[in-house]
Image (cartoon, rainbow, N blue to C red; front, side):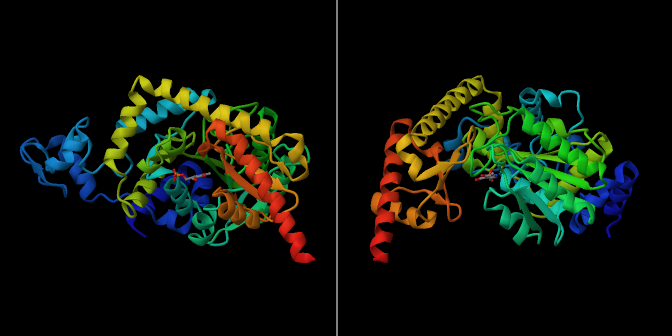
Length: 437
Ligand SMILES: Cc1ncc(COP(=O)(O)O)c(C=O)c1O
């Protein structure tokens, strides 16, 4: 093993050996090399005469660039577009995102969290967490309603076993006891990776205060029972809370809860502020020990350096300018209101008496989606029928569940959308009766 990695691991063991035990084999091998990037960072401070270090080109004290590109990006200086951003992200952006985290999550104030590390959006942040902490056959404990890409990120790429529990209990609340049961099954191995995503994709659910207390006590109970727990919070749709749910990330309550619990927040502006294609996100660690936060950052930086090297500088600049602009809060609020009105309208429509014979729906109060539970027809058959007959696109999650992204449907079109789905259901049912005669 590389000497620097060995040193990081020794320091981890000194400060909290549980965190060392949680690392994957790859995570243990990771370190940040003192190669070109650190020499060049040093030179950028001290080399006042000639800086012949880094692999970009310069001209007249500016990054070399094509004028025909720069003409299209007049609002930004070439220094904020063309040079490589640091592997862990543009410092100003990281500081700005941390400020936002503290503003929006009062329970984090005065707690010890790292500086958010920039990622190439959330998929990449989740993937970094998986590389750092997941080995073949490790258990990922997550609700049975989850974003399909977790299969690739955690199972296909890292060989983890996805162990699900029922998201909802019989009252339509977060199923705290099912979660407890699943998590405590990890007592034998002593390691668990919990993956929670609120607002949830595909259901659009975020739990309320009491349920969150239950979740936190389950994680604490597992730690007290001797299990080392990484809790990955996929906060992709953070902030889009329209109803009676909590309005903070669980990150705040999990931070400094127990030495055997390592909370990781994965988030970003992609969904929150509607910049999906800019590919900017963050991974933030929480630990009472500043040394551990530094070691985890070094390992994450090494991982980024060895995969994507760094995220788009231009995208980071655009996101930073947006966060610092006076229009940010105003436009964010405007879009929130649009999404909230749609969610309220959807609830009003899908709850109508006429539809009760053909569907139920999972509780929803947040995010981009809601999920119908079909009572009479197969979701995939219906999905294809709606596409072919009506040009209506939906997502079949499994045999009964049909996900509707109301984020993509104007408020005035919502009624018609569900009428078409209703017609589609009746037609599929009729076809099935005819085929059986
Ligand atoms: C729950 C959840 N997490 C993460 C992502 C990925 O987000 P990003 O586009 O930032 O990679 C998605 C995207 O659909 C998602 O639904």
